[in-house]
Amino acid sequence: MQFRDFFPVSTNTGLKECGYGALGAFLGLLGTGWLCQWALGIDAHWLIAPMGASAVLLFAAPASPLAQPWSIVVGNGVSALMGVASASLIPDPALAAALAVMLAIAAMFLTRSLHPPGGAVALTAVIGGEGIRQLGLGYVLLPVLINSVLLLGLGLLYNRLLGRRYPNGGKAAPNRHQTADPEPSARLATQATDIDFALEKHGELLDISRQDLQELLQEAQLHALRERVGTVRCQDVMSRDLIVTSPEASAMAAWELLSRHRVKALPVVDEAQRLVGILTLHDLMIDRERQLPREAACFEQHRVGDLMTREVRTARRYQPLYDLVAAFSDGGLHHMPVMDGERLVGILTQSDMVAALFTLALQPGLVDEPASSGT
Image 1 (cartoon, rainbow, N blue to C red):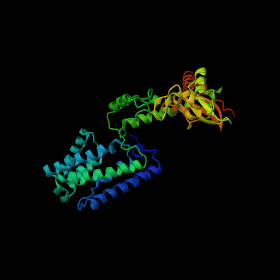
Image 2: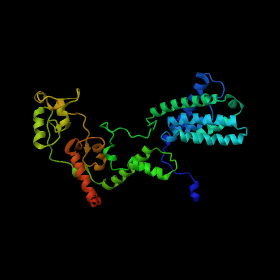
Image 3: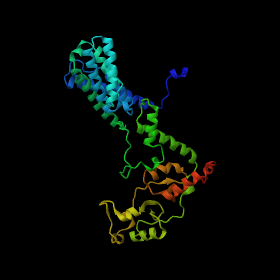
Image 4: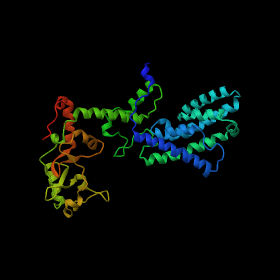
């Protein structure tokens, strides 16, 4: 232990998030109090002090496992039950208070609903005064569960309006193919089983979900990769001798180009050689509206302009290759035109990306010197 350990630990929370947390707590407690006192007509004990602590977690630290809906409702509920039981069975207030908090913690651990304000909920049942003691088991429902449910409902609405991920269930979102496999970028990264092993070995409770911890580690690994390969630009690995087509070309002519050159996509350019779309094998073979295979006769009836994808994601000529890794891996892109201003100068494919990253992995010295920028 060192003297500096007693000073605050630095955080990366910005002023905006601090403001959102403070404002959310104000609105949540005001709304809960108003709903209890006026909408539900509750006269006494309409808002208990531990709800202030619940509001801190719910609005200022919504990603915390201790702030999730199950923890708020069940944690406060079982703690209230333990507090009422202790107050009714133990005449000595000090002993009853200590026992209430002990039983509340044990009950929350058993129900996987650890919520720090639950200790205060249990303590309030013992030292909250004669009015609280007279409520008996009613204290569990009113005000504890009513307060918890109303505050949670307002918290859900507030966090959703801010675009926060809440509830934070700790599970990864399904990949774009709707299968159970991790995203490609995560398959060689630290896995959930590795996180579980480390957490089990650590033993103590950490106030972060497994999924959030895994995502933070992956972000750190990607940042390290960016530092290694950030000098490699799109122009260093892109294909320059392009096979293109025009909107007026027939679908059959486009098919023949794809087949002859053994490529899977054709940039589509207008008479001024400006990029207006891209035609892929998927565009040719699958009817987007009906999600059914096209008949061979359709190739003679349609032009490229009828079938191409018009909203095309592009890269810049001097853009770092690292910027596009996620688009090709997790984003599912197979081809990306490369632009220099409005001029089409190349195309990047998954093959280009794989070859470049593999070469860099085998020869890390290639990135010791900045890659040519063409300027």
